[in-house]
Image (cartoon, rainbow, N blue to C red; front, side, top):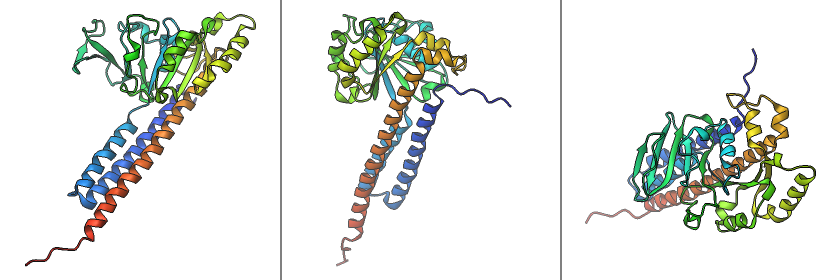
Length: 313
């Protein structure tokens, strides 16, 4: 029997499954801790704290796709989705950030400034005071990675200095820069305004590489290695439309030569490494956190058990 080709992001799904398996182990530890002293306030606090750690591990890593207008963000997001989805969404290419996440059924909702959520029809305009659009899609890749698709940073109508990426739960970033004008001062200034936690896990993707001729590619990459690598975890080159054309309808590679030639193989390896690092750090934090919480709770239980018992008069 012929083996079915795997989707390019299948390995990412395995990484998320490992995080979810660890979350299940935490759930077991939490239940055992409750059974040891469920009436103690310390144990109940530990239960709540470990439950938060579980929820964090179960949520796929959230990656922001950023860059100036027309830098190839939508094409790269489509590559992460494994299909040309964004051009079909009426809410794409707006001036409002869009969070794309997994859902069993397609859905669109607007998060309003006052905290309310309004469900929308796919072709409906977003209400006034919308701060975030949430798009749910039944695409398996989104179980491995949620995508925060941000409008172009050259848009003067947006106040990006007030954009709270950490509040949006962003853990990693992909910045798209157009090859013929790669890493302009305006881009560098916006990127430098973000916190270290946003910039720590990041890839600078040089898009539209087909626009460079002759030895221009080598010169551009040499310059970026000198002036930009210090600000990013990795630098990658990519022709996203060509990468999408190299995939079949299931998101599996059907043209390996084209996939490699357009830089998609390099980007795939680096993006996979980025998310693997996120999963590793998540689990290391969860291990340390649970050991600390469980240790504190057990110490409190032990101290209570050794208190002198009151005697009746």
